[in-house]
Amino acid sequence: MNTARKLLTGAAMAALVACLPARAEVSAQTDTAGTYLRTVVFSNASAKNFRIWTVSRVRFGYWPLNPNGDLTGDLWPIIAENPLNQRWPWVVWSHFDGQTFDLVWSRWTGTGWMATSNVAAAASGRDELDPRVSFDVTGRPYLAWVSSGVAGPDRVFLSVFLASRWMTPFLVSDRSEDAQNPDIVVQPDGTIVVSYDTPAGHVTRTVRFVHPLTITDDITPFSTVSVTSTTTTPSLHP
Image 1 (cartoon, helix red, strand yellow):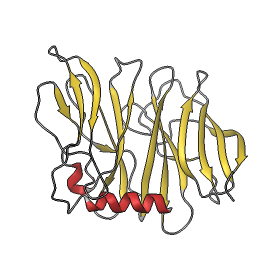
Image 2 (spheres, one colour):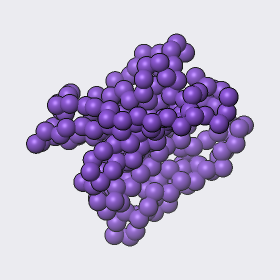
Image 3 (cartoon, one colour):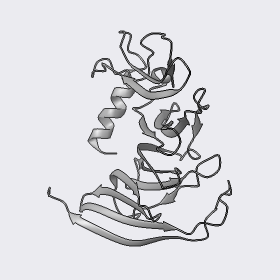
């Protein structure tokens, strides 16, 4: 785990014992008719008072997502609005389970937040961090993140949302690479471009799935998965 992640994890854990009040909140905002307007994030977190999820105040039209997150040390969320579904947001974040961080997610349903669920089964001894979300032309979300552990390099994984859950994670980075800071973009033709940093430089990988006629919640819904090209930009830092 790199130094920046260690500092972030340490700050998150400090939230478990912090007693000072903080103005911090992640909420969906609706109008008087209940129509989704936006997701609002308030925070005045500091190194001594690292709060993300605390509800600042109860207000009409504001729907808090994860009000107990600061009690467990949950990390900062990634929020992505689905452009083909009334901009309703999908939110992914790292939830601390008492030993490691697991990725969890929720989405706005039009009347409230869906119950929080895990993206994938917990990976023993590893932290799931730095999620990034992108949508394809049909509005289907795709997710990339880093799996970090004390033993072995950090790895970048990819998943696709199926009918009601996320696909079993697919390893994008090489097992020998120490991969960090992922990003993901889904092209109009369905090509998935995943990029990340390594000590050797910035790596870009192009991934393609062959979709069946109907996407279901099967564990392996795609007939083939392939990395069609890989490019590396040398690091500017030795």
